[in-house]
Length: 464
Image (cartoon, rainbow, N blue to C red; front, side, top):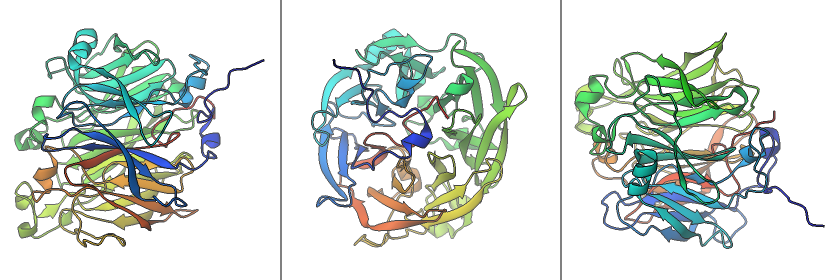
């Protein structure tokens, strides 16, 4: 008699996920900043034993121009094994790919040939606006009962931004997630603690304040996002807001602990108006409330104004611009992308409020333009941006473009795309894999990376 078997890439616990087989492929969002040709999802061979290692081996182009593909995700993941809403019959098969500028959603089938994915459905912005009231789609996460999509604006691209759900099998737009949003208006990233029944959301700004680039008056006036919001995940109600203060701008990427018994996580703040530094904060339970503590300050680096873009000349410094972070599956190492200075930093966060710097590499950067051991073209532009970690924590991949309208504000000569890989030592320490450097084909810039079978920012777990 046949029996149901859960997808072999689903794991009850992060400890078991860390023992998963190594990924052989990576899927990478690639967009055209000039909006002259369609964006694409590229397929990269990441198997060191393959003749195609460190090469793009497949691609699926979008049917339209100007999507600006962003933070895409899987239709299903390990959260399907959670006891509160089990869906063990689901399979990790479809990539759900949002267009940040177009507000369009693409459903891409990675089977039967993972190197040759196919678009099977496109959900147009009008349908999303009609059924969910949102636009400017930013991040996808697979939850126990459906696919969560967050959006930076309402249907008109104004306040409030928020979250809506897709049916995980039909991909129908179900509707807005929030039943009571309290004071929350701005949106950016979201994640959750399934074991604590808590959603966490962060803030950027409304689309009219970033679609043509960061607006200096809004940034220096402290009018971009600076808050975290905590929600009752089951009741879909706002519980608590934490304001980081007027000095802090762009509270961005959220990474909760993978172990569901741990009620903490990390968030990056892109810039301090006081000194251009970036910072990393830990959120944690404090009695019956949530609290935050700043655990890392990353200072700006002094620079000759002649080497700086117009936006920064007056400051005589390069801001680190922490634009992405990622946490290893064992909750031990936090990776921090410094897109401005060109550093990728590795911290041991075994004690989540007392981090220790354990590794760093430099590549690209506004001033340093640091090379890669394999790159033939020497000085590189852009800097460490979207970062992803293998489930076993031994490999780290990252790309160098932030957002089409913002790239030229900090890299006015343009960004030539690249993707690199780091090897991680057993007890910390990182170094470039000298065999892995992708000089991204001109006309596209690479953004988010997703790994075959899951990675350290794709799944959530209900068992410790």
